[in-house]
Image (cartoon, rainbow, N blue to C red; front, side, top):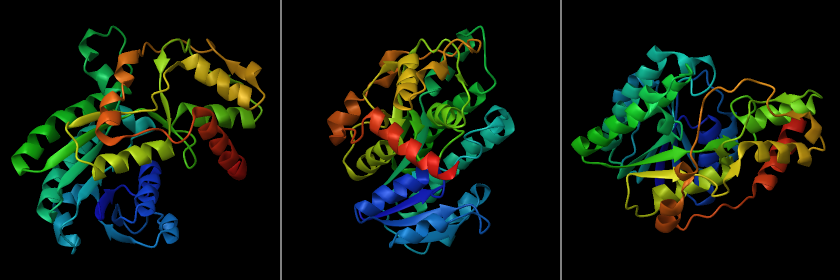
Length: 304
């Protein structure tokens, strides 16, 4: 891979992916919402071109990017991937359309492949009608699942290869409130208890630098599938992960399992299978969970 387009390049995943691509001497065109966005992080990268284009205007993206013959486009941009907007169906349905628009834009620009950011919560969405309790945040997972279905059809229609990257639960520097690890570290650093539900289900927590490495490999290598789960391969019961964070920080007694009601969300261990990813790309994590937590703690100490 020599040239890549990354949408949402100044977001949490986008920043780390651009950093990984730069490590491999990939020229990056970063697609950013508008000129009000913070792009100071790109000053450390020697080979990044910035193009401004709101998601609602993605059909015009081929006119805004002068270069052609890109190897891949990574479509990471997604409005309200965290926060209250996850439960707003109008916002999330717009994201579905924008992803389909991105397929046409990638094909018109001459990308050989387009890669999308999915989520393991799609697996819950696939069974949503059979659940007695339905969290409003499932709207996000339902719309990601819908996007996966539609870009599969649209990619065939446009004649472009695609890869759906189904992400695990991510954590790492530059993200605090959007993940369970960031929340836990923040509470403990602030001297507060970190409260959780039963936390008795299988879980997979993936350090962000390993996610970026996997995404690079999926863009760079010949892939045999259209969808891959991207995780750590280190499956634990959620409470074990949380207690480990407490142990690392010397505050295991402030990890309060069962302090909150059960939200009814259930993951299955088989959802976290990375065997296809490993077989097709040779992927292996470069950081243990403990190493990733320490890196995240050190970063959070610098900002709190």
